Length: 360
Image 1 (cartoon, rainbow, N blue to C red):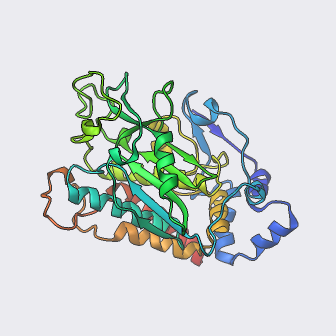
Image 2 (cartoon, helix red, strand yellow; image 1 turned 90 degrees about the vertical axis):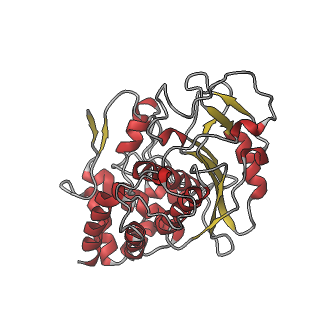
C-alpha cells in the first residue's frame, strides 16, 4: 500500500490559495467553517486523511492527471455554476430501479433526498421514469458478463433534448450496464459538462453482478434486432440493500460534482477521487475533503452546518425498522419502505464530529 502525502504548505495553498482576492474570500468564512476546513493541513487530523493506493490499477496510478486546487477551480473559464434561473437538478430514471413498482419509486426518492442534502440549497426534481425504448439507444450483450448494456452516448443525447429550462443539470440513472463505444467493455457513467447532462449506472454495484450465476446474465445469446427493446421487459434488478444505496449515492454525487467543475481529487481521501474498479470505489468516502468542499460551497453557496444537518436528517428519516430488511421480499402494496441506511451509520458519526468542530 502506498500513501499519497502532501506537505502542510501544499495543502494550505490548495485550499486557501495565494491569490489575495481568494485569501480574502476565505477569511470571510465564519470561524467554524475555517476551523473545519483548516483540518485539511493538520498533520494529525482525525477527520481528513491522505489518499492510499492499494494497487497499480488504482486511478491515480493508471490515469495520471494534473491536480486541481481551489484557485484553478475558481478561475476555470469553462466551469458551470447555478444561476437564479437555473438552480434545479433533474433526475431521469431509465428502466426500473427495483423489481417492483414500490421499490423502484422509493429508491429514486431516497436518491433525490440524498442529492437535496448533498447539494444543499438547490432543488432536486424527478422526471417521470421512462423505458429504455423511449431513448431509442443502441444496446448489446457484453461478451464478458453476458449482461445487457445500453449506449451511454445515445442516452446523453436523449437527456439533452429533455433538459428543462430551469435545469442546472439533468442526470439519468439506471440499473442497466453502460458502454460508451463498441471497443469499450463498460463504463460506470458518462457526462457532458458543457451540456450539463450525465448518465450513471448502478448495475455493477449489485452483490452478484460478476458471478457466473448472476440472474442478470442473458440466457440466450442470439442476435437481437437493433430496435427490439422487448429484451428489457423482464430485466433483472438487484436487491435494494444498504450497500447498493451507499454505492449509488456515492456515484451520483461524484458525477454531479464533475458537472459543477470539480475534477478528480488528488489531495486527500475524498468522494471526488477517481476509481478504476469497485474495490477502489468502495474505499472512497462519502464526504468531500475541505478543498473540494470549498469548491462546492463556492458554486452553490450553502452554509456548511446546515448542509451537514440536512445529511444527518436524511440518514435519520424513516430508519426505525430499516436494519436487515430484504426489500425484494416486500409486497408491492406495502406502502413506504424503510430506507436501508445501516451502511451510512459510521459516516453519520463522522458528520457529528464535524459539526462539533464547526460549533466549537
